[in-house]
Length: 240
Length: 240
Image (cartoon, rainbow over all chains, first blue to last red; front, side, top):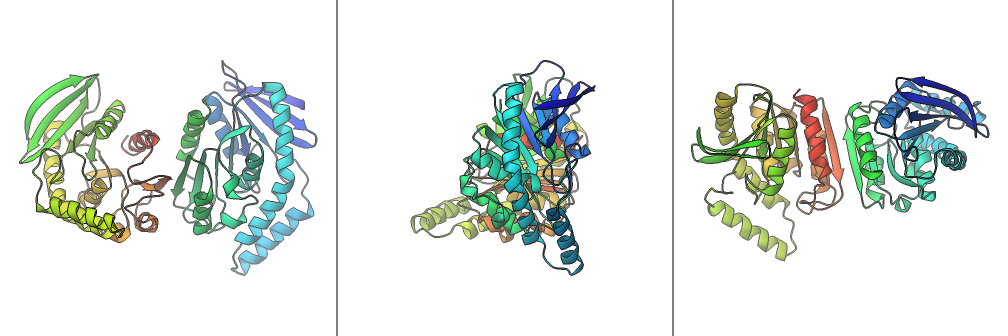
C-alpha cells in the first residue's frame, strides 16, 4: 500500500493511496477515534472514489467515528476504460433509444465488473487493516457498488454490516442466501433500471436475520439525502 | 376538555383528560419547548392509550420537543367493549382455528371502528389546540391506529406528517389517493394479518410527494425498536 498524498479539510484527514494499480482514498477523523472501525464505500456506475455524493457520505460516516475508504472500480475514475465499458455504454444507448429494457444489460455488466472488483477489494481491505488494525468493517454501495459488494461480503467474513441497494433479484452475481450479515437495503420505487419486483425479491431472499428495506419514490439516481443519515445510524448500531 | 389528573415523571408532565366520553393522555416535556408542536398517537387493536410501547414512543417524541397525546379507541382501554368487539374476537378465533385468512375480517372491523374514531380525534384535536395553541401536528399509528389515522388525516388538514403502517390496500377505509402529506410507512415482511402485496399496494397508491417505506422481517407485532428512532427523526424533519 502506497500513500501518495495527504491533506486535512474541516477535521478530516484525506489520504490518497494505491494498492497495486487500484487507486483509493482513506478518510480518518482528525480527532479521537478508533481507527479500526472502518466503512468501505463502493461507488455507482459512471461514478468514482471522489464523486461529491461519495465524499459527503464519507464525511458523515467519519463524523460518526469511522475510518472510511473508497476505491475506483475497474474502468472508473482514474483507471483506464476498457472495451467492456465502451460496449456497455453503446449497448445502453442502443436499448434506450429503442425503448428496450436495460436491466439484463446492466446486470451482465455489473457481474463482469464485480468478478474483477471483489479480489481488488479483498487486497485493499488487507492493506487497510495492516495500516489501521483489524476491527469491525461495514460496506456501503448502491447499484454497481452493491453488485460488487454483495459477492464481496458473501465471501469475506470481515464485513459485518452493509447498506446496499438499487439492484435486483437474478441480476446480482451472488446467491442472496449466502448473505447473512445485517443489511439495510435501498429501493427506488420508480427505478428505471431495476424492476421493482426484482429488487423486492432480492431483499426477500437475503438470509440475514436482521434486514431492513427502505423504499422511496423516484428514479434510480434519486435516493433522498435523509438515507445518508439512516445509513450512518445503521452502521453505528451494528458496528458499535 | 377536562383534565382529571397530573403527574411528573422523569422530566415529562403527564395529564389525563376526557373530551366527551373519550379518555386520553397528554404528555408535555417539563422543560423549554414549543407546546404547539404535537404528535397524536393511535394505538393498535387490543392496546390502549397507556400501553407500555405507546408510552415509550410518547417519551421518545417528547424528548424531541413535541407535545404528545393518545386516546383510547372505541371499545379499547377504559372504554366499554361493545358487541362489535365481541363479534370481532369470536370471528378471529374461528378463522384462526380453521386456518382461514383473517385480513378481510380485520379490515371490516378496523373500518367500523374508524368510522366512529375519526370524529373523536377531530374533537380531541380541537380541544388540544385550545389548550396548546394551533401548530404543526403529526400522527403516529400502526394497524388499527393506521386504519383510523388515514381517513382522519385525509379529512383534516391540520395533520402535516404521519407514520403509519401494518395495513393493506383495499382493507383501509380511505382512498389512498386522498393522502398527500409526507408519510413513513411500516411493513412487516412476514405479517400474518396483512398480506405483503396489499401493504405494498397501499404504499404505492399514496399520493404523497414524500413517502418512505420501511420493511422489516417478522410478524405483525414485531416492528423493531429502531423504528421508534426513525419515526422521531421523521417528525423532526417534517414538523420543524
